[in-house]
Image: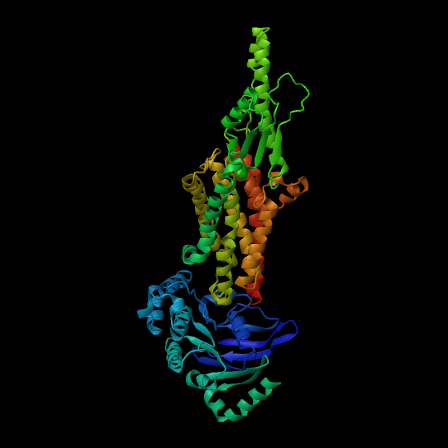
Length: 232
Length: 381
């Protein structure tokens, strides 16, 4: 389980996270829903050990994030919103590089290619790929280290519906592999399609955390909450 | 892991054609142009004047003087319209019994010539005039004493016989190539800022840096993996520029580069210079917010350091205060070291101070860069 307790993070006068608490079950697909600037990316950054926080505590699978940052980084992986690979390198060179620096096994390497359907474009320069192919490469790099947790930061931004559906399907398949997925988006339909549970964040605060089924029963109410708080 | 990071850096820089052009083609072209352009300045017998001689006297002495001028390689005899100097031998010049000096040789000078060139011309012409007068004195003395005449005859006005000129304690005369190769090696090496800033800033902008950081890659490993390929590239750059000086420049009728000093000293100095250039480039790359900003700051700082450090204008012609100021530029340290090796036959001991200063500068810049990069990663850039 990932347990976030009363976490606050300020950037100067701006409260990025305000006493945020939530719990993410192991092996689930957990959605973080919120408008731009709600604090989703900040939370992912903190959970992955990339950024610190001002107060509160976080436990990731029993590990304290402040004391066991290195270990937590080893068992987790982040797929950033931006395409985090080298455009001048080929798909294969990118995968080789990121697998070698993480000591990834051949099995994981092959699995990342297979799940993300990259076998036909391995020798293509990454910068010349289509939007959807780039997103798939971005994700493939994220699973090379066989992580127990993957953080997806809006991985479907700017791609066509067909590629989006392919990516969502591939993310769903990680659950079958026992991987815990934390997925941020501001598209409700994406969250509904793949997530077991969802937390709605606005202005750094938790608005609601519930299962998808419960959320759907109160969809209209939550939608109004998000819109109102987001507009303040 | 580290080898994979180094390999990645190599692949990225080798695919950056514009950067490679800046690192190799630009200094090579500069070496070629400046060596050929300055060839005559550093050539021993290069100073020559286009002159026309008008002999209004037509005496035996004036004809001898004209012949002497014709034979002197310092003077190119041309038509009056094309002449920089018109030498007019006045009527009565050959009257050797006239000691009043009223028959002065007239010199008409092209208005565009600088005063130092006029002084050089006068000195060259004076040599011909004095030679001729010595001959006349010798002829006259021989009527009274052969011994006295022969002592006059042994007097030489040839600069090569009268003076023993040594260049920087060496018998070899510095040529334009030896002056320009070190200058453009030093200047060119600091252009490593272009590929380095592109890679650093792209990694930051494209979140690759986030990804590397999330993979437990330390700032030290990230920095070191970039140093290794650029060190290698910088060494290749030095030897390519030396090869251009040795083998390409002579194809343009210009003297080849000669390495008079120790090759070991050259290796140590170029290694230290690379560390210095990489350190400064890394510092600018991690501090800047965009590639445009980094290349602009890098370009301006390179030009300023070059101007202060004697790349644009040789230090020896700077005023003393500017020569002191030049010592703040690492380019000046590198340039001094290379000139010691190429011109003074310098060994390792001779360039040790420059090498240590360059190394220290580079290492401090790298340490500051790592602190900045660490803070940027912690603060989400």
